[in-house]
Structures are given as structure tokens and as C-alpha cells.
Length: 413
Image (cartoon, rainbow, N blue to C red; front, top):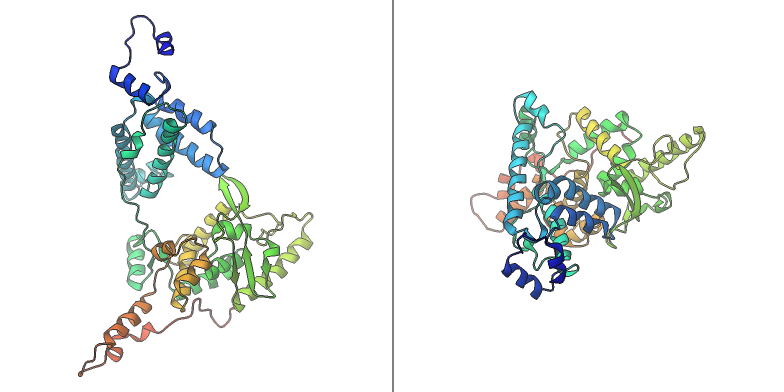
């Protein structure tokens, strides 16, 4: 109370009596002039977190929390203020999405480089705010309760991966739209893409083939160590990853014990990697200086691949191949789908992808090829005896025969 009296000049009103009583009962420190923006900056400065987490927190504060809430006094922040911020962000995201889909090129240009905020990103933003305000309550005793605790957010159901069917491809060629944010190539499409990049980009062909065959994450492929590749015993070990903070790369161990895994290799995969090793040796002999970083996949100069380089180059190759679009991360969905279709159970898929929980694998990463659905439906129908016809002969199209994971033409290695 003495500190409160000292801070207030003669003639200025005291805080509301009920607020003071509540603060005193909660042993809350006097915070009359502390704004949300100032608190968030001080909170971030005092946090000991990983560089990637710090970068994420800083972006959330700079792009969203500061502009929308920074001017408010911390003690006056309410659930309504936070809910209004999310409504404003949602409206802005809808405007960006509408502009990106506009037929007017000038309108599309006006939002170039801007993306709508997804529900998943909105939840990450809320997590940052919730953590900061929880610390304000429990650690610093600046406010009596967390106003973010009662905020309602939209559902964050992960989009299900969908397989590019013929009619989807035709629709995409006509309108440029994809059926889902997460798409999976059929095995023939995947094989055609590999055939294309084998000649169009032989430098990255082995890396993209390994990601498609074994479901490596982008950072895991960039960070794969030479000593962790055993082509004699047809296996690799995933131990580290290369991630980014802004554009700065960081090398670090994989996040969880499940992500540290040993993956067997198919003979075709190993053959391609052996040819890459021989080619890499020629690069090293021609180079004036060869970096000693121990990475398996490198550029012809010996430099490490930047994860953003891989994404940009992959997108270019997909466009030049004429294939319906998938993201680089969708190669993991492809790998999971092919393994499941070839007879692998969910546990094998989970261990291959390096997930800690099987539920995550089943919910997000395993799409089933249409042929598998047809055979499952046929098997179920055949359990019911009928005198007129047998559903196996009547229902299964000839195109539904099982296919290999990545068919190659006869001239391929």
C-alpha cells in the first residue's frame, strides 16, 4: 500500500477498491503502469528456452500479441480482449485467403508473401500468450488470474491426407485447386517424379528418393551423418537434424527417443546411395577444399544443404515434372501410405516415421490407397453368402490390382 501511495500523484484516482482487495488477497505485486507489450518483452528476455522456441515466441509477440494487445495495461487485460484479437486475426486471414483466390491479378499481388493464419498456428500463438500470463500469475504475482484460460479457440483437427485420384488430377489441371492441403501421390505418380528428377536434378535425386522410400523429415535428411549410413548392412540411423531459426541453421539431436531410429533400406535404395557416394568422392577430388562436417548429403562443393533450399528446389522440380502438387513434407505421407499398402502394420509405420505415439501416426499420416479400400470392401461383402453372384468377380476393377511402392521404367537403375 505504501508503494501504491508513492506512485500516485496528488489528484490522480486510485485503482478500484474491489480490484485492490482482490490483488492484496492474491499477494499480487503493484502493476498499475505495466502494459501487456512491456510485460511480454520482459518475460521473453527472462526465459531460458531453445533458440527455435525463442524465435517462435518473438514472432508471436512482434506480429500479433504486441500490435493487438500491447497497449493494454496488464492488470486490465480480459478474456474479451483476447477473444477480440483472435476474431480480428481471423477476419484478416479470411481477407488474405479471398485475395489470394481472386481473379484480379492486382488483388492477388497485394497479398503476395502473406498467408492466412491456420487454426494450428492460432493455437500455437495462444499457447505463447497462455504461458506468459500463467507466469505472470504464478511466478511474478502480477495478476490474480490468467485471462487466456477461458478463451475458446477453433478446432484444430489435422487435415487427412488424400491420394491424388484421376478425377482429382483432372480437376487440378482445370482449376489449379488441390482437394486437401495434404496430398499423396499414387505409386505411378511417385515413380514418374523420380524418373524426372533422376535426369533433371541428379544432385538431389538420391536424397529425395530416400525421403520418399523411408519417410525422413527434411531436417533429418539434411543432418544425416556419414557414419550413420551403413550400405553394407542396408541400414541408416537417424540421430540428428538440421533446423532453422529464421534462416540460420542449427544442428541438434533428434527431439525424442522415438525419432532416434534405425531404418532398413531396400536394395534399390542402397544401390542409388552407393552411386551417390561414388559421385560425391569425385566432387571431393575436384574441390580445392572439402568441408569436414561429416554429413552424408552435401552439395557438389561439399557444403551442407539448407532446409529451405530443399523445399524451394523440390517445389521447382514438382512444377517442371508436371506432377500434381505435393509438399516436401508430404513425402512422409507417401512413404507411410506405401508401407501400409505393402502390408506394414501401424506399429511398423510408427517406428519408421519416428513418432512417439501410434495414435498420431494413425490419425495424421496414414492414408490408404484406393485399391486397398476396394479390396477391404470386397472382402467384407464376400462374408455375406449370395446365390446370384460373387462380389469378388463383380466388384473389383482390374485397375485395383496391388502395385509396387515406386515402379520404375526398365531403363532406370
